Length: 519
Ligand code: GLU
Image (cartoon, rainbow, N blue to C red; front, side):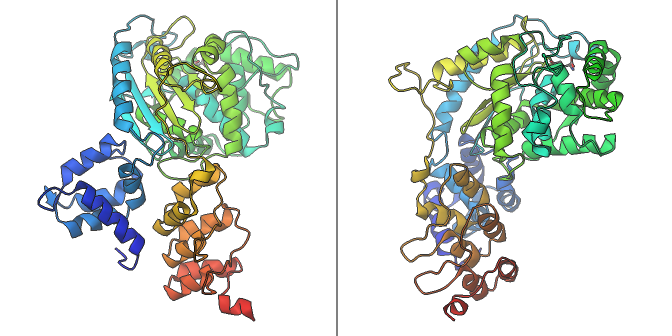
């Protein structure tokens, strides 16, 4: 650890005081259990360095060892222990969800999809639920590690990819954005001869024709899986070749839709229909579990920034459009009812998966294969019904003068609540994902403290190139050379602390020394 960093030292000390036992040591397993209770799971990339170090030890850790282990991942660990996350009482929230899960598990009505044998072979009793908040607090219940085919859950993701690659005018020259009022695979187009929206089969086939058109089919498929994995915080996806083969064998309707759209000149010029259809079947055959899917949903809830990696995977503008579509068209012919009763953007697929996005709060994914008459998972719909009965998550639960008696488990930090001090702390600790969350809510990343030391000064002084780049390139900083009380610029900090990469980078962005400025 860089012992010069006083801030880091004092934060580590505080956590040590919090978790050490009477003999002054920290019990490793208890500490990891504590992280889990607060929603930080062992596959969370934000604690990889901590786990790599701590796994070299057994049993108890002395103070210095403990501090050394946590120092690299300190901001996420601190966030857990200061209950600074979006769901501060995460354990309580989890207990409520587990009760809801048990209640829904008793529900055994519904029928599995059987239009292809592979789906009929699923275990009807499987039931998994996973949650991931925008702060990356996670919970897995039941069969959360069983892979299922995404099927129609690929549709909003493909829509996002198409929108991020082109502008929305171009995309919507080829697909509408109205609920169709008919079945998801109805042989029907809108008055312009276009599919009604991107979340029914015709529209999803259309968005497939808009993604990475110039690439070979193999590269295009790689691209889509990579994007899924980025949204899932690098948790892995699977693929079912047998589902793909049988989708292709039983695809008369999808072929009919493609030809019908082609007859109406709905596709971009030079579209290879067979290529597009195969790509669509492949996307439906991707496999995921609720654990990873909840992270994908949380990335949408977080404006396109994956909570586990802090990376902006898709633009927030795209997410906004996608959630609007999911809100009105995501649940087959139950979409209107779902919007009315549950009030959240959602998408379901015939394999039994449903994911729901609670903007700025969390993503939730359920998997249970028995479906209702609309094609939605019975337990899944029940679970979301129960969740929104208990918590005020419905889009319109928070109207003024509402007295619904529901619980609000979240603390949404408004822009003013992120004090300059916190922003400076995150910059000093090197936590880009925390800064990104602040920008999403339009916090000001350029404010200095009492000594006019700004986030950029602290990031440079501590050598956090990633933060420096983020602040300058995406933080809308107007000035790369703010001067502190002593006349020093961030560039001076980088030079003084010998952070060569940082000072080199600053030079490319017109960073100069305070002494140069006076000339
Ligand atoms: N592969 C299915 C189809 O194209 C998708 C079904 C679904 O999940 O809605 O018919």
